[in-house]
Image 1: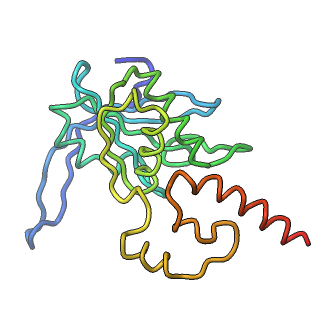
Image 2: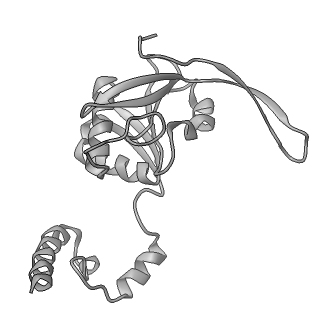
Length: 200
């Protein structure tokens, strides 16, 4: 066990279940570790055993790494699981004087995958974590084996239909009607036009 490990425990939990007074189960807790990215002290927990296929689990916004405990408990025999606390979440340090843009989260994940030699990695992620996982996979495809993104891509098809029919003003106006390859340059042109109009 490396020197950053600071917690390893068996926990006895009791939860109400199907009207019974409670079900008691024993969960072998994960080990707790630290890594650094952009001078921030970031936290993650690890489950499973060394040498097993790598699985990275990324939580959503306003959440923390221990959200994955029940999933990790069931997958720990098949994978080496790492679940980070994103910057500003759980036991990870806040980014004082820095930002919480997705590119910073992506860089943090890239550092974790690199430092822990996880590539090729399977990623399971939820919400904000799903968005981060998909963007990370697009930037570093050679390090990713599979991605399971739960609610991480954006609006539902029904919401997209409503958005397509709505009149949008401002820099993002009508970009949804263009092919994906044209959206970036069109968005930048709209931003420049909108800035000029709003100054004027």
